[in-house]
Image (tube, rainbow, N blue to C red):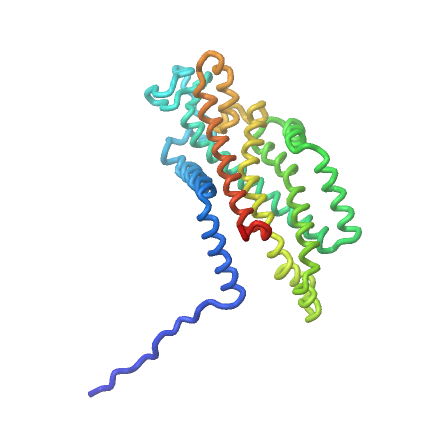
Length: 308
């Protein structure tokens, strides 16, 4: 009889080393976050908001050629909720409130992701240069940051957006100019603290380059408070953006929650509450959800609160 070839058993080697430590740490963070019911509520709201934004073309028929402009029905002005074709009613200009809320979630998501992404990147670069190089570089960059921080965020963003003209793109640009400084401060403080640790000195002694030490040892360990701040800013940026849109610094008819509130404010005194109430509720839920998640992340990631 022919002998059957024997194959050695397949042995799976468990992940080890720094990657395994980071994966275990990530799993522990997720478990601790999910133990907090308040944080879970925030996560559920965020998931629902993101789902609504992603499925906007499926839920409603996009307005052509620009789906971010609300369609107008001039034969249905100030219609109440429950009107056929307009489940949440219409504005004084015939804008469909449901369409504005659904596509407004896309507008808010786009605003948050772009502004947070740009500001974190700029703040990380500036804060890293200041904290890691120190000396005159640190002194110069921090004086620039101090100039930006001396002006209240909302007033600064309002001035920039008003100077550039009414446009949602200009609102994004104004918020990006305003918000990067806080990340520069956070990163700079973290790097100045972390670069004094023994493991950084050890890496320097064995001959690692400055860039290698920064990329491998300093920056990854400096990013925790940035994650918390970015999560909270995802909510506050939409709130500030809606404020700028409300006072007329976005295009008229844009499917954006602040624009909807602005169009509906004239009807509140006469009982036409829906055009402002529904988008205002969405702004509230968006900001609340990200603040709840940000607080939960801070409790988990902050060493001073981890033991709780």
